[in-house]
Length: 119
Ligand SMILES: [Cu+2]
Image 1 (cartoon, rainbow, N blue to C red):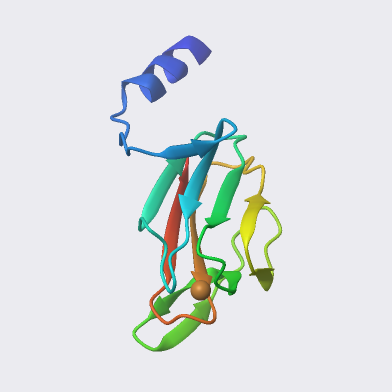
Image 2 (cartoon, rainbow, N blue to C red; image 1 turned 90 degrees about the vertical axis):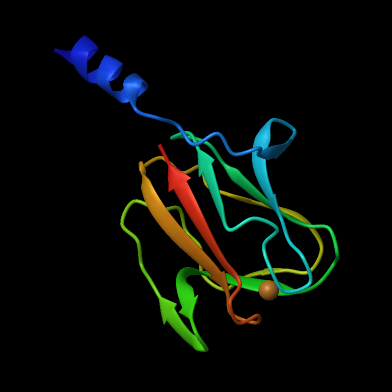
């Protein structure tokens, strides 16, 4: 029974994003007012690095920008993330221990949205 479930999971198509990693941890790089990719897929139990290469301040929460409106979210099972300010360098989120789709946005930059798929 468990084997069948595992095989079923393995048979699902996996989005093969050309993800970058830093020290083996999946990473999304930050531009001046954007994520350099709109989504990233990581395995359950993985952390996620946000790499502020440009040294531009960003502040992250769960939720999305829709037009010029911020919509905060409180996703169940997600690691803590509340007004996380990044000024430069790398910040680590997680680990993400629960499979699901999580939305992260930057409160400073309209439209700066990232979808994190944990599977
Ligand atoms: Cu930002």
